[in-house]
Length: 132
Image 1 (cartoon, rainbow, N blue to C red):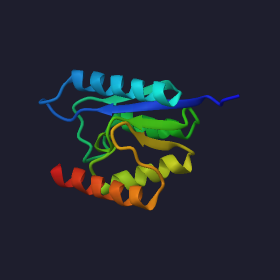
Image 2: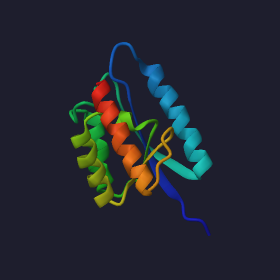
Image 3: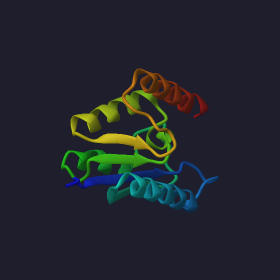
C-alpha cells in the first residue's frame, strides 16, 4: 500500500511588474508536479508583492511555523528563488524545514541529495542573491 505524501505549496511574486497571475501560474505548475509525483496538495501559502531578499513575509513565516505541526511532509516551490533570495535565509529556513521532517522540492530545479545537486543548489542560490 502506498503512503500518501502531503504537500504544501509556497508561491510568491515580488514587485508591481509581476501580479496575481504569476501566483496562479506557479500554482498550476505545482499542481501538475504534485499529480506526477502522487502528492496530495493539502496547504497553500502565498505572498504577494514581497521580496525574497528578506524573511519578513507573513505567509512564509506561517508556513515555517506550521511545518512544526506536521501539516505537510514536502514543500513545493516553482523555483528556489521563490523560497529565498538571500543565501543565509535560505540555509536557515531549509534547515528548520529539515529538522521538522520537511523536504523542499522545486518544480523547475530537479535536485536530489547528490554532491552535484548540493553544488548546483549553492550556485543557484548565489545567482538569485546576486540578481536581487
